[in-house]
Image 1 (tube, helix red, strand yellow):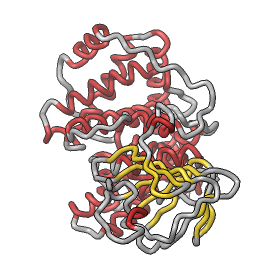
Image 2 (cartoon, helix red, strand yellow):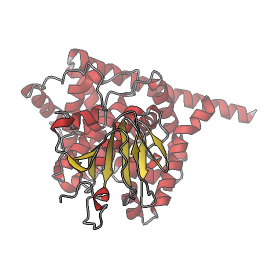
Image 3 (cartoon, chains in turn brown, orange):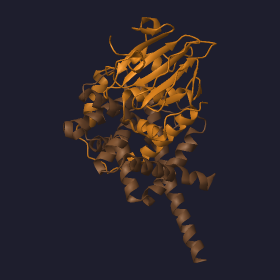
Image 4 (tube, one colour):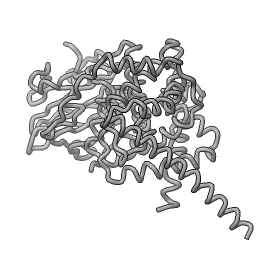
Length: 209
Length: 214
């Protein structure tokens, strides 16, 4: 009896968190659509207020500040400009606003880093990492499921896996660079990343499908 | 659907935006053929986005938004590129690299029925190349250095390990000794990622070093 009560409280918490997340997601999807259709600057400012500090954090994690104090702020400006110009490519049926904005931030970081390294080729990051091409009908459902699951599972992840996943996705480090930094064999890094990704992506798939 | 894919580690590195530009271009072209790998990349991006959202926010500059709006109003956007209407022959990332068509590329012709063109050298010194084998062309037995990649983008070829068609992403290493032969029914076009040339001697040195300037 006690067990089932605890379980129902857990389920409720799970549901409430999910509703908040879904609300937030709906909210920013609406704002992005207003930017796309009406060039609505108030909607754009709402997006800026929420995401700019996260984009800046991403720039700092990526080590941009070591190469110039102004660079994390420059990343914010470039990403927001790109959001303004490409808002028409955002499709709420395919991705969460946060997923779409993450991909833009990643692409702009790649372009800034190339400029710093004075490496150029004929392609921008947007040519290689396509912002538009998810044609999957179930894109949004899958994206929502994964995001829900990651939110739930991230805290259960063993510290060593959590640390490595953060390094891989936030710090602009290849598996080899993570291995060098943590003084681990490359194979260990690869298997920890794989294990972590399996837990983050798949646990829920098994539970809910 | 293809049998030969980037490894899951390579797809995760691609999703996080790190690694060799040449390899990432080959992966991008593979995704155009392979919905399964595409899905894995999108799933990794969803995971990354949650981690991105869970960062501790860092305060932005006070005048940041005003500065941004100044920029937006003073630099009108260049009009977005016209949408492609006809389906392209090669994956879009490859079309973009050979914007003026395959015939305007600088080609080298190491043997009859085979020509190669160097598309770019990346920040790690890896070379992205385009190979065009005429139907039925056979390249003599050779091996590869390090971790090299071939991606079929049109036609197909076979070697001692198997037969490959469009989208197949083939990992080649020093263990891989082969003499690839293009399918008889049509020309084969490949993207390749190879290490920068080192001077090798011997009559077949050019296979290992297709981009070595003579």
